[in-house]
Image (cartoon, rainbow, N blue to C red):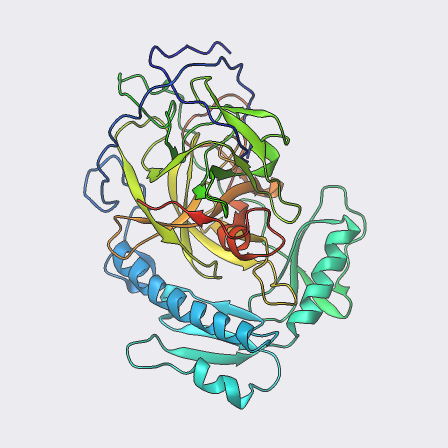
Length: 434
């Protein structure tokens, strides 16, 4: 594929990054130039705005608007984060699961065994907090962790994760798997929902960003925005590593350590590095700004500032912003990897689109997974797109080259794992905000 060479000069930095990969693009190096002024952020709920990508129709759960839903979700997540911090400080291998679905209007905490007196006050709702309901979990976190590890090691599954209520383990069997156990170490094993009940119409390819703007999602310049194009993937969240060196978080499968990442215009960004052994994460040695590309895949206008990073909770509503699909919302987190024995976050989470009509695909790997602040004007970093489930394929939205694959069910690697788990190569980093 022929790649045009930019007339402006561009900065070259070394480092590493990851992204669902697309077709490889032949790249040519460029020069350097100061970044253009960023476009103004556009609230996602502005009627008629091209940056608006929230699902059509009323918000679920009886909420008046999507900002109202995300406001409730923030309150649930804030309480859930406090509970997790308290249980880790007390060295409790609980809760087994937390469901922070805004439609419930309460936080549901699943606990195995008797709640210690020392933890009861931590689980209560205080003035101004969301209601908390403590429910029994059939299996312990340790039992579920062991079952997940055994299923993963068997090679028979493409996904294995605890049920949110602690009742067992849910799996997706790998293609061609012969051994399909109903239990693992005494824990029930059930099959995750698969096969798309219906598909969406493909969105035709209409050409790349060509409006003469100084920067765009398809051909960004330093400092890079989250969601910009890499030759075969997407830019993830901008970081400052523990030593204050700038880097971009992306998907580990996008480039081998020491290989070079190129942007959408074929210019050198930097080297891939910091590949994680536990998650699909890596970095690119390039500088990023505290903004994310919003709106369509062909976009030079719509961005949002990054507010902060957040925890990953079952039931949360989330969005993605891959460079080939553009910003897509309407996904819900169904499952999360179990915490390790010290209480540190698991590496991955799994999400789906309820109507099974659309989802991220090839070329979106490494791109942002996010939620919105209550007013819808800023984004909260949650993860980076990793892989789709082969039995949930749907026609693609955005750039739709022949043979491109997209999925209504997908996995993402969690930001809370990347920043806070001791086994992550970017432990101690911080997300650049805007």
